[in-house]
Length: 151
Image (cartoon, rainbow, N blue to C red):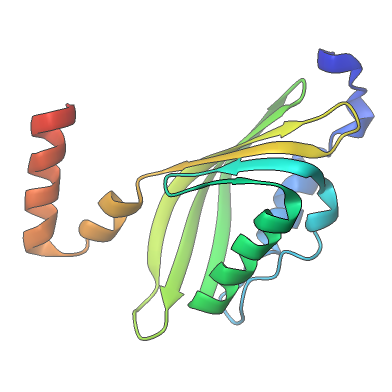
């Protein structure tokens, strides 16, 4: 296996799905405390908005999201594992303060180090597309712009 990684050192896809699904609920704020021990001290997290390096900064980012969210729920649609990589496809439903819940679709790549800790997490999603698709006039302009310049 990659980097002398033992199969037993990486969490099973079933365990990951269970842990990530219980991180979010429709009734209360998200809580990541049960998965923080799975992350390496030098975790590199990146998504459409930011790149964070270090577990301390990663935890701070999660805590900021917790404060902003009224509710947050994650449904894992597909999950697969190869060597030291786990890929998850998900639907995350979020609501902020006075706004109704909004689904966001994406995927996550988790990379495990030789000790079985998550050393890198890369989230892929189209934040603005999923938000703008709910606003009729803006949706038309945004999709036109994306097709014109990117597709």
